[in-house]
Length: 159
Image (cartoon, rainbow, N blue to C red):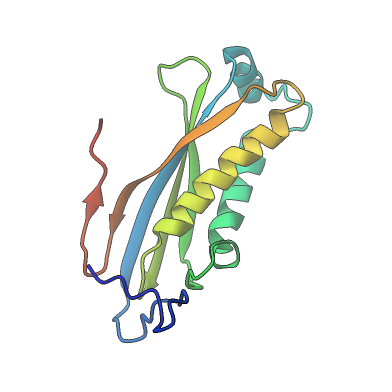
């Protein structure tokens, strides 16, 4: 593994990816939002005062993925071709999972864009619902999948 992220003086630098060939890159990340089951029901029924929580959060996640290079120091600006943000409600009452998928034909991966999209969509859910419940928590922001580039495919193993 090459950790050449520093110059001779020890200063952080952006990794030079100019010699790499572009390949199709895909990454999927998630963030878990926990709230009361009653609040999640209100989100689903459109009963939150600020409006369409999931619609606004989806848009925020897409915008965040596209702006990752402005938010994460030393990340590369990428020409993103596709971003999707989806929401899943599993068997745990009051738990909403945000999933963000990013695709791009690029020289470097899109993992940070997917993680940023998932995180900002989750934060937007909190922002739109904090008037109803300030005890909402956001956790487990993680990379689930990535493919493309020299390192190949990564799939997170279930714990």
